[in-house]
Image (cartoon, rainbow over all chains, first blue to last red; front, side, top):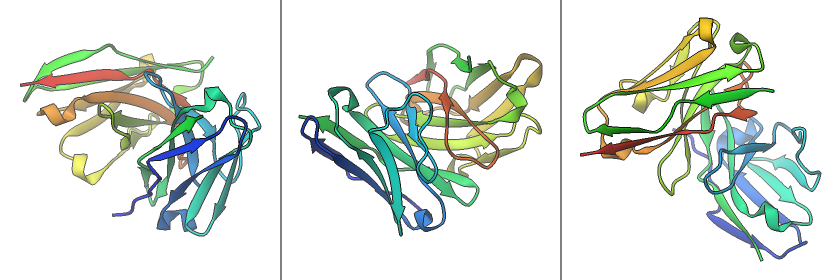
Length: 106
Length: 119
C-alpha cells in the first residue's frame, strides 16, 4: 500500500525559515494538506491544496509541491509555531497521513 | 460557528465494544463527509475511514473493515463510530473531522474522545 513519509523532527531558530516535507508517490497526483497539532489539542488545518491558507492562518505559512514531495514552509518562525505537523493526502479513495514532524523553535 | 462535539472518555475491558458520537452544528450536516482518525498515545494520526452522511455510504481502511462501523442519525446531526472486540492496542484518541465530498482537507475537527482499553 502507499505511504507518505515525513522527517520525525526539525528545528529552527526563532525568526528563521524552516521547510517541512512530505514525500510519497501519490503526491505526484494529489496535493498535500498540512495540520498543526499542539499537545493535548486537536489538529488545525494550516494549508491545503496547491497553496491555500484557511482563514486565520498567518501568511508566514506557505505550501509548495514538486514531483513526489510536498513542503510546508514557515518564513520567520515564531515561538507559537512549535508543534507537531502532519501532512495528509489522497490515495485513490483513501486518505493517508504522514508520520508527523516535531518542530522545535530554538 | 461550525462545531463537531464528541462524546466523553470511555474506559473499556478487552473484548468489549464502544460507540463514539460526533454531533455537528453550524452547517448542513449532510453536505460534508465525516472522517474518523485515531491517535495512539505518543503516536501520529491514523485515518480509519469516511462516511457520507447524506447516503450513509462508507469507506474503511481495509485492515479495519471487520472492526469499525460508521453510521449517522441525520435527525440529530450526529455521526457515530463503533469499534468491536477492543484490545489494549486500540487505546487511543478517536476524532471526527469533516471534509467536502472527495476532499481530503479536514477543516474542522472534533475535540477527540479518549478510549482506554484495559485487560
